[in-house]
View (cartoon, rainbow, N blue to C red):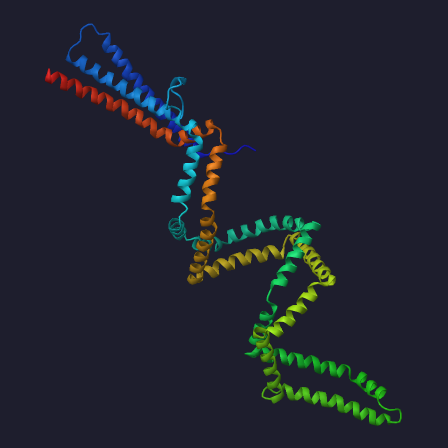
Length: 417
């Protein structure tokens, strides 16, 4: 595949060719005028004035041509000292360029100021709030996800992912997380809701297993105890348990308050007590060491992978819809929350500085090494393309200034003579 031509490079090459031709044409004109005045048999004031101007223009133009040419190559191919400056000093130029970029462009103040002027959070918000862009995000996700999921089917990659997940689970502070969760539950309505749901489950289990309780009582009493007594004992057990559940359902019941207090104490112990934290961490390590846990994680991943791939294959994929809706919702949420955009900009700035600053010397070294790896002809071409058009303006100016100086000197000499 052939890359499309760079418009900037094309414009630079056109300007370089134009200025080079103009400077050369002007030098040739000056030389022609000088030769023409030299061939005149009779010369007067004006002819001598024009000759002096043309002579100085040729000198100025040739001097500037030599200077400009000597920067990039040897003039006329002659081994003149201190010419072909760029190809002879390519490595030094690369090192200086790398150091210049690292020390003058990748500074904290400059990077921060540039990021603040760009307002990346604002631009992202504007981009995401357009439905077409949200659809584009979903489209790219639909293309990338199957490939990514397919790559994860590799056994080594899957084993690595499971090991990495296991390491993350081992490093996670489940004790504090569980403690804070329980503390949040006991501090408000969630505790009552969950506790009532648990009582409902216990009540249903008691009702469903009442016959089994009757049988168990009959089996564990003496043979000479009448069955009517066994049933009365069993009904007493079931009734007592049901009555206890009913009492605990009352929000102000002391038993319910005691349970809530015990859960709150457990939450505090999980957060603050080293002994409780150690026991939970030990239990977590034992669970993660079980082969069944690894097998369960692999089975869970396989199930999720099949579900996602099946959905991605559908024309009306829920995943695509969710990604598009999520991107659009994110854009709208950022648009309505200036504080969040400010925090996002601050995070981007901190992240950029954290990445760039420790590596700016390496970035400078990378630029230096890249220039060193180029051929001298490539370096010359790049620099001449960037600077050549302006340098040939110097040739044009030198020719014109030379003509003016020559004219002025002849007039001074004429007036003094």
